[in-house]
Image (cartoon, rainbow, N blue to C red; front, side, top):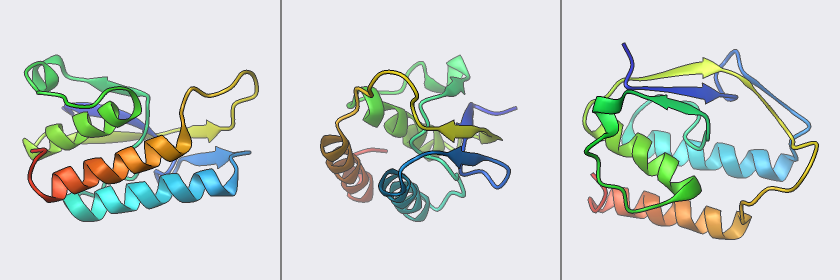
Length: 123
């Protein structure tokens, strides 16, 4: 009965393996800020593995793409009283290849998105 199902390494039954402490600190800090700002007990806001109910997201306007887009989509679903279910998962550091994420740009992007939510520009 959920509008969004998200894989959550920060779920009480989830976990992380071989992830650098600095990356965990950034991710957990952003999740904390989203949780406090939106007053929703979602453990993981930056998960890139999600299932969406089509009717819950089809008409949502999106401003951001990529990593920020997933957080924005979750914010917009929750602002419309959507239901989120978190499924525990294990996040493991990449063993092969390199990430496309640019850490500094992504962190500042999330801070900008949080500001847009706080000021009512993202509803």
